[in-house]
Length: 101
Image (cartoon, rainbow, N blue to C red; front, top):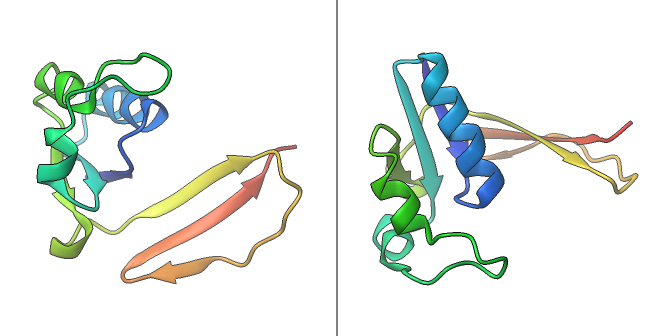
């Protein structure tokens, strides 16, 4: 199974790391620009390690940029905002916002 995690923030890193330990064939993190993402060396605003540092410790997780294609993805997000949105398609990706209950 191929799994893509969209984004490189702490939550996405945690999800990608956990999925990789569960054994799918491929886990990748999608970003707008792989080189720029790996080039960031400073910690984030909360003091977490830079993505480049994290990725050096998690080489089993690949990286792709959105422009060069990714596995089919269904993105599901939790939100505290009581907004109902219709699923939308971005290229080959589907996005669904799920209000927190």
